[in-house]
Length: 380
Ligand SMILES: Nc1ncnc2c1ncn2[C@@H]1O[C@H](COP(=O)(O)OP(=O)(O)OP(=O)(O)O)[C@@H](O)[C@H]1O
Image 1 (cartoon, rainbow, N blue to C red):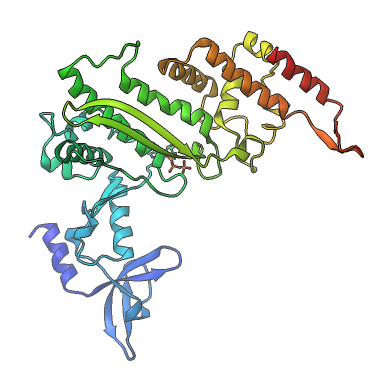
Image 2: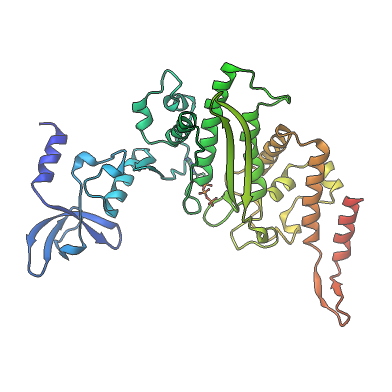
């Protein structure tokens, strides 16, 4: 008898249930005695003493053959503890994706796991030799992207992928993986058919991928929940010609940007990444021209925030931003103007008003004329 069959036999010999637990949320046990008034005595796997519980509050445990199942819709008993248990078992094996019927559940691994490389793209790409239907069934964000592509091409109908979850759940990262997958698969298809280079120096798909560092610099920030929290919602639209399988356009709509963060942040949070990237990434000459100094402590809009995020190099991120801006055809003058505006925002933050006088005119604090003067120097 194999150990799996033995597990099934052991399981079948008892009535297994999930018990609510203050510390572990749910623990597994089996009923050893039926008592009066719907009460049962339960022997728990991890507890020294048996527990008396009302049977109505207990959920059933699935047989071991369902452990680490790919799709939780297949569970015999679909209840909260069984779902959490299955997700936990899978997560411990680095299986961060699990289907729940039509939905894909993703658990944030908070570390790089090697499941997004070219080999994985090929596994899910139905046009490649490695791709086949069986592999597409294995839960993965690439599987969702592939399915949307296939349905677009087959049915010629618009497809939507909704990525949702609490802050830090991994929405931004998974959205990037979807775009990475689609641009890889589509560009490889289109380059077989035609020349995919546009009339600029960069491929269209490179431009789409490079939009992300720009959005993140200006719209993401460190919060207590997430070091790279998107402070806005976005709707990304990729236009794909289902006949030629070419990427023909892309458009990002953003909404609900947290504007107040530019002037105020809660403790242990930061302003938008761009300000720290600017102060670390500009050359000494550029800093002088923009009347800036490097320390965040010199700016009211930054001085209460962390100057650094562990593991993040703002200078390097600034380089990436400049590269991304160039990729999507921002000219040197346009970039310089953006940096001017950012510098002016920081300097305006140093202009402080002391209340209003009797004539309802604002009175500037002593240091403010210098800040105003600096703003004017940048502008003219
Ligand atoms: N699949 C993944 N692999 C490795 N790390 C990940 C993955 N998903 C998320 N992370 C890590 O978790 C962090 C938070 O994820 P992400 O920014 O995607 O969350 P979010 O849901 O978009 O949060 P918010 O709503 O605050 O913007 C990432 O910066 C990254 O470090």
